[in-house]
Length: 137
Image (cartoon, rainbow, N blue to C red):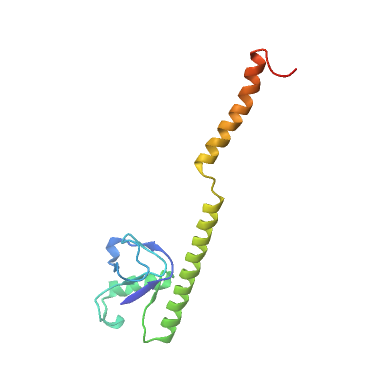
């Protein structure tokens, strides 16, 4: 059976979830990210024909809100998947905007060093002149 992740969760090896690198939302095998497509169980086998332990895993995935069934023949499934895809797109856009704001707000290290050196020189020169007996009185 095919699924789409509603939220991110660990891909515990013992579960037997199959993530395909070519599928939408794939980042790496150890974690199922929101919007990722994955499969579970034997390909082409209907839910009713699955063993009890596989039905239990699928029930937990669905009940916990971790995934929805990706069934292109079911309108509710198609709508649910489209909603998840829209959320993922909006979240990625917000993350990119936040990263861009952070990049623009970040001060380059060279500027920080130049400011620190200028401050140190500004404090040290008058003290050195005073110690040498020079400077204004």
